[in-house]
Length: 127
Image (cartoon, rainbow, N blue to C red; front, side, top):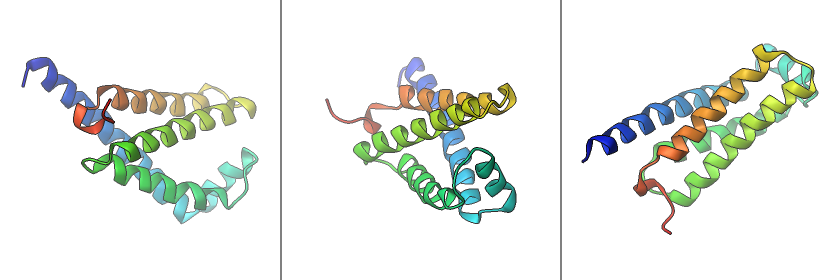
């Protein structure tokens, strides 16, 4: 394996690990539906049942990203995470929140995009 390929693979796994850990934890928190989480959703104008939809979707996406093969499902998982983070950032913008609320989903969006860009050929759809 060439040195650049090795660095690319290491970068992919670091970024993918961050996605898996953050989205996995977020999915579990969504399923737990704590009062603090429900207050955050309510402050953004979302219904209390939304975390019960997002939680399983996030956990499913995490499982798919962590598993070998399944390139088509990986595309869908990446798309779901991109939509989640764009939606989160936009929700905070429309709510009039400051950068302290807007930037975390933007940063995680960049992490997801980095993971996607660095993924090895074995995790891509065949051309």
